[in-house]
Image (cartoon, rainbow, N blue to C red; front, side):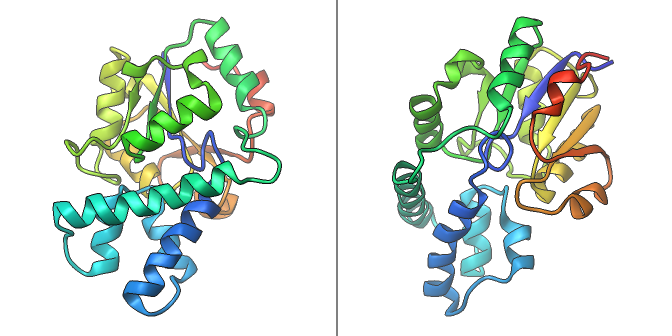
Length: 223
């Protein structure tokens, strides 16, 4: 029985994959001497900075490299968000869906591979405290294995005081879907913001695919 919902954030509640791809693409060209392929982008999106830098460097980054390079990339990403011509907004229908869940008393959490700097930025830009308390936002704090490991979703379920099988997860990345599946999540809803519905729908464990949250307003959440 589904009793609560866990959302990934980037590419799920906030359709920002293109900005992350552009920022990481600049590092890829500097380090690899070439652009990332679409397949490489798909494989690294949704993972934390340490694992992405490991891919780009061909080795595990030092703590100093992770802090410096990851920090530079995230600042570049936040600059892109601030300079968005029409301003940044949550995904279509997301605010209304979150309002509905709050009104119905559905426990909610965020499980994001972003670091604390970006989490603070999202609270500032989107005022997500309307729906999520700080203790229900699980982020990359350096104490967990990154997606596709199950750690982040297990921790988010624990923050909701629910078993993983009692939670539904909304996730856009293949690595994140694997993480949810590895955690034993009860239902996985794939959000096709960057990947195609066909790619996400073919992933093991996905129960359905959405492109925005407008139709979610009619969905019976708790099952």
